[in-house]
Length: 389
Image (cartoon, rainbow, N blue to C red; front, side):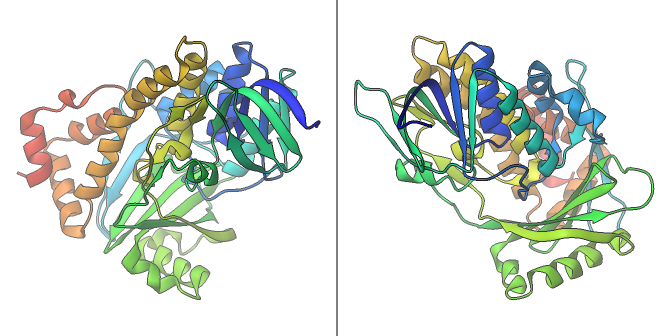
C-alpha cells in the first residue's frame, strides 16, 4: 500500500459491523478500504446470537445462506429463570415473516465476512494493519494513519468495538458507567439434539447466559457485576467452570472446549456518532449490555443505515438521526431488563408476571429488536411487569 491511497470510505475494524458497513457501501458504488489489526480467522468473546432483526441485512448482503449451510442453529426465543426451578419461556415475536434467530460462531462468521471483503473488487482489505489515528481539518477530507501509511478518504467509519481506541482518541468516549458489568465466555460440547433456546439463569450478582452455535456446541457466558468478579482473581477458568456447573447442572456432562475469555466493563456511549466525515458504527458507537443479545444485529442494521446516509446531502446529520432511531428504544429495553433482573427476588416477580401475561415479555423483545415502540405495551401490562400483580 502506498503512502497516499485515495478511496471514498475507510473502515476501521472488520468485525460484523465494520465488514457490513464496507459491503453495503461497496454495493452502493463506493470505493472502500478496510483495515483490521488482526489476522483472520480470529475469535472474539461474544454472545454469538444473531437476533431475528439481523437477518434482513444479511440477506441483502447474500450472506445468510452461508450461515445456515454451515450449521448455524436456529434460536426460537429465551428461557429464563432461577437455578433448579422451571424457566419462563418467551418466544421471539413474529414480524414481517421473521421469528427465529441464528446461533453463529464468531470464529466462523467473522472469517466468512472477511472472505466477502476480499472477494469484492471495489474493496481493498488490509488485515494485520493497525490504524493509529484519524486526522481532519475543517474543509479537508479525513486522513487515516495506519502502520503502513496514510490514506485520504471522503469518509471514515470506525467499528473497532466496545473499547474503541479511536473513539477515545477523538475525545468522544463517555463511560463506562457503573454499576460495572463484565462477561466471561467459553464454549461447551454438548451431546444430543440441538437446544434452540437462549437460556438465561440468574443468580446473585450474575447470570449464566447460553445459546447454541454450530457443531453442537453451546456458548456459555457469565454476565457478572463487579462485586462477583473478585472471585475470579487468579483462577478465571476454574471459577468459571465451578459457577457454570453449579448454576446449570445440565452442563456437568458437557465438555468445555477452547479457552475462557473475559471482556468488559460494558456501558459505553459516544458524545457523537458522526462529525467531520467520521462515523461510529456497532459497539464503538455505544453499548448498553449483552443481556438482550442484540449486539451483532444492531451493528448490521447500523451498517445499512450508514450506507444510506453516505449518499445524503448531509451524511453526518442523516446518520445521527438514523442511529438515534435505531438505538434509543433498544437501549431502554436493555436498561429495563437489567433493572427487572437485578436480584433473584425481582426475577421471581418477572416469572410470575410472565405466567399471568405471557405476551408482555415477547412484546418487549420486539421493542428491543426495533419492530415497534413502547406504546405496544398497555399501562396494565407495565403495572403487572413491575409489581407482579
